[in-house]
Length: 112
Length: 112
Image 1 (cartoon, one colour):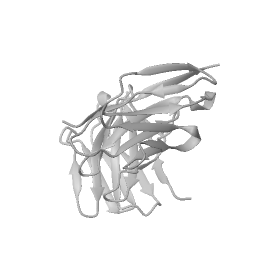
Image 2 (cartoon, one colour):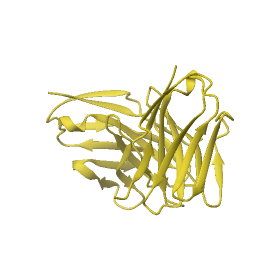
Image 3 (cartoon, helix red, strand yellow):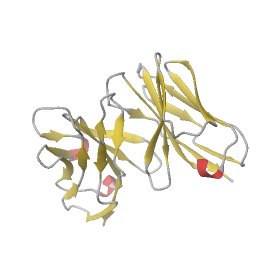
């Protein structure tokens, strides 16, 4: 099956902990993205990455960092989570120069 | 500045009735336009897209959208909605670097 796979589906953690979310795509795409979706469903791009360039949304706090081992994987690490990090994190992929995105089903983070 | 406006946060329609979800964009060049749908607890899925040519584009599940350059709009339509169409619908425009600029989403509620 070709798709974008995210793990875990759901994660609960305490303020100050470190968390890491995984994303893998089997579509052969060369560009991957992380989005944050808040409780009002608003989508905010956090990072986009291909094998040539990492583009960081400058409004993303430094405690967030992407981690990529190859073009099929783009993980998201959050050092020292804060309550406002509670959201759904969506991973997506596409071919470079193409706006047809394929999304994963999301990781729902709850910070208590 | 490039932007997408979905003026209706929520639309309620009776099952079997017709539907229109509104989308207005602001973009200096010829836009690439998209509609995505997000079903509960899932990621986003591409419904349809417009790149050029016939201003009316067909999508999956009986959806269509019409591009209007004069009105800077890309409204989504369906002739007869089904309860399974209940979801959040996002309109987006592709920027010059192929990243998507998203609207705020419209939640579609289907009344039995």
